Length: 142
Image (cartoon, rainbow, N blue to C red; front, side):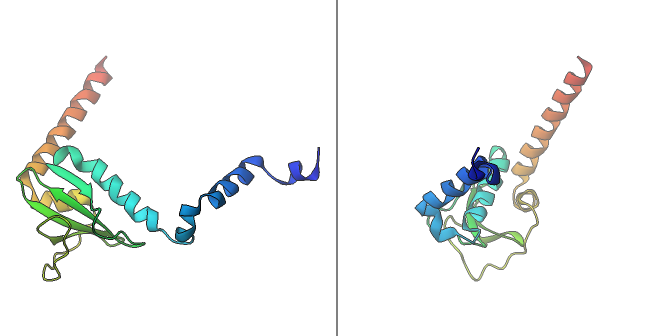
């Protein structure tokens, strides 16, 4: 057994070289650019069932500290949401836009924001919750 094999965990070695080999990650080194987009995708996947349409904006820039999400409620109202470390807020009443005259408060969660703008979201979310509770009750009795 050589010194190399005992000093290095092969898993560590392969992980490090894998990252170094992917040149597309070079520009993101030391930043969280990917993370805010991932966060936005997670937000979308979490509540998509309770809205008409929702997707991360492809035309507005995702940066290290901000991403934009387009949402159309079940009432057919369109919003562009800004996602930052502070939370989410409506920045325009249309897809892919930021209107500086729109000054809405931040919401800590997407649930809170959608709850405030869409009664149909609230109803869909409540129904999904009830169905889940009913299923848990059934599973518990079997």
